Image (tube, rainbow, N blue to C red; front, side, top):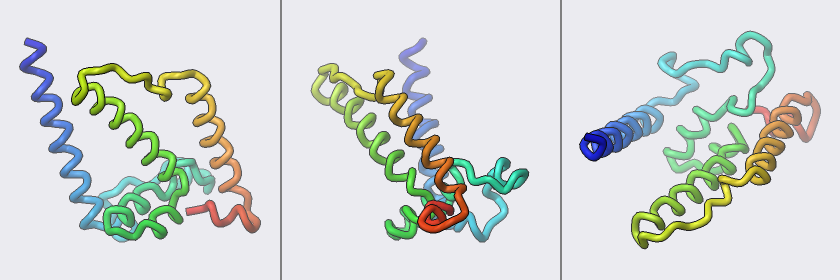
Length: 135
């Protein structure tokens, strides 16, 4: 039974990713109300670590790399982590070999957490050069 469910789940995930990519490619989150706004920023005026991510994804999908990064610098970290994790998983599938995943290490998790918290703190300082980090 599980062998029949797994391909279905993978198919649903792939279709969902394609649909979301289509939305973010074709519709700018700055111009359309279908995209959710950040609740933290809406209520407090404080930028969260994810503020600007939707606009960043739109810009990246449009091929505007620098503009995408300007909306949220953490998108670089996210892309690196996703590419690394995907490479590890594909390596396991292709080579039928298990590779050590550094993301499953407490030191790596702690380092990423510190980077996100520092980014969160610094992007809310209202003076140059920290204002560059704001979306």
